[in-house]
Length: 596
Ligand SMILES: Cc1cc2nc3c(=O)[nH]c(=O)nc-3n(C[C@H](O)[C@H](O)[C@H](O)COP(=O)(O)OP(=O)(O)OC[C@H]3O[C@@H](n4cnc5c(N)ncnc54)[C@H](O)[C@@H]3O)c2cc1C
Image 1 (spheres, rainbow, N blue to C red):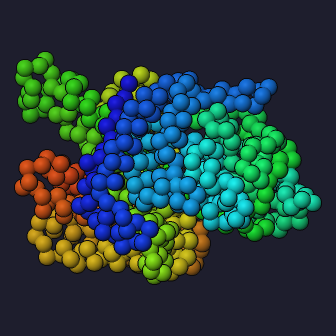
Image 2 (cartoon, rainbow, N blue to C red):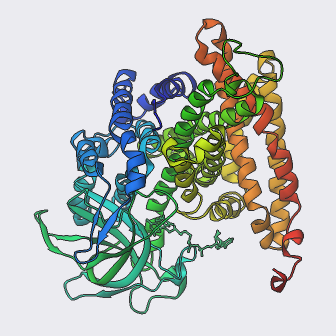
Image 3 (tube, rainbow, N blue to C red):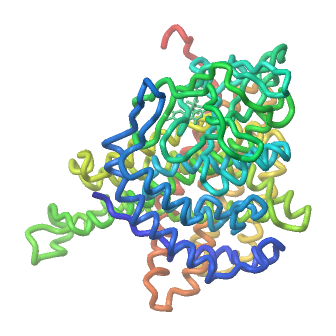
């Protein structure tokens, strides 16, 4: 069975040595009292919960899966999931970063980011049950009426109830404008919603007493397409004004999907037969309101792959030190044994370091982004809030798509380190690969993320958000440009920054001529920007590691070696990607569809 050790040292390195998180948080009135001791104890306790309670349920949860009782529509989660959830609620974990006004603990989002990474490493399928509640909470917080907030937010904060997002229908996934579910207004101000949703994560389960579904549907006479979709909150059990539970609402699980991975999470077909709901936000503006949840979920999905990358790496690294096969090409390294441990082989190291670099680069970027969210939510300076919001908007599709593509590469590489043993269920490695695959698909496929990045976030505002983030990189390049020991990082970083600027301008011009040019280049472009971000964060980490390299602490030696590996072996991928992005539309569209 795979083992998991929470990467607390690396999180502390980022918090206190790279990102200077305490000083930044303390400048925000809501976090004026925050200190390292509080954060450290949350990381320690959260890490224990992840490693000791959740991780042991991952393999068994995968094997057992969820079961649906068709007569009652009840879904049973794998053995131990319910008890773990009860422990999670008892520990106050659901409300870690939620506002105190609704019963949360009000800790910074960056702390929750670290906690969630650990939960994802331990058990992605389990973490999807509470995971969706965060986005449901955020959407209701942003767009709910005072009554809706009072009714739902305290229960979502405490974890007594969980949330879902009900968007997808069998004929409409990416294109939500095709949606058919209907909402009929009632005389009492509520709505009766009818329709069939599919693929709804955590749509039904036995962990919490109520489930708060956020459902997209159309009002009578709604405009066609995505401008005619409204958002409704539809509880599994209706809720009385005093907060107590009432009758069972007519929204129920009519089928469970059989799928490639995340078996411990219920992926439900949900049937609504005149289910009672209330409108969230304005009529026909449901997609706008839902985007609050979708953006939170996109960051959450990137974080899922970060967690999987870390745990896969840890296990593959341990295995590579123990498994003996063949001798090193340059002569025996463990002559006392009949063969050398496979970690002596350069290509095994390539696979391990790829996963390690994607985990460490991803962690730095995710924690940086979480700090921007803290600033966006809690700074008392309007300009700071706006700048932080722009950065988060720019980085969200990159975190979703780049992390999940990397997660797929990394988990597959780590499985490869195990050879045939990685392909066998008991090692746990093939589960990481299967679990990682969905992260590239849901919450908007990675293609859709890349279109959002290049089309909306970059070209859509004439590159303003990118310029703002690029200015941070340029300032770092300027600051470190004359430091001899940093040249190996600064020169390639500056060079890539220039190339991105040129490429962006070039793609913008092409897109003027033909909007399809965006679609032809977007996936390459997102990956190039992902690498630009990782190069920036690795350079920042290397700066600290270089300053501490004589401290004797092997942590810094390893950090520097990982940064060098990243720059030497992974970053060069950008040269091919830039070439591919420049190739444009013609090679993709030349062949007539009938010839496929
Ligand atoms: C396990 C699981 C859990 C899920 N959980 C939820 C959930 O909780 N709630 C929910 O509402 N949904 C959920 N989904 C649905 C998920 O979000 C969708 O599957 C996803 O958004 C893609 O939609 P689709 O499957 O209909 O694919 P389609 O939209 O049919 O896309 C098919 C392919 O076409 C590509 N494509 C589509 N449009 C374009 C375009 N304009 N340009 C380029 N390429 C394009 C896509 O990228 C994809 O590769 C889940 C799905 C799964 C499998």
